Length: 60
Image (cartoon, rainbow, N blue to C red; front, side, top):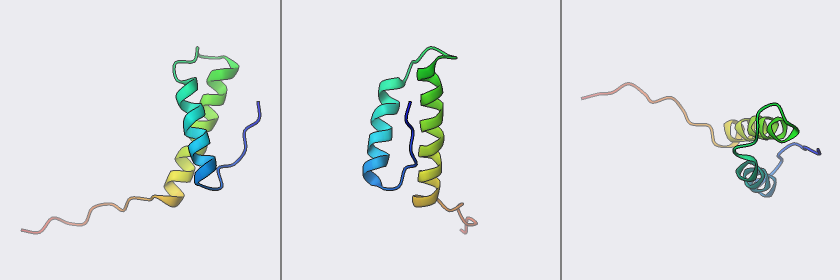
């Protein structure tokens, strides 16, 4: 199993495709381990590149 950092949009898209393929993997298998690792990498990439600020106070 080769997992590399997500450095750009192409890597990100590839990781999402692999995640989609691995969805439903049986727990505690190499496939589910790969799924978990890829999801962690995608979450990190998204938080660094598409961070969403907390909403400000609501004013009337």
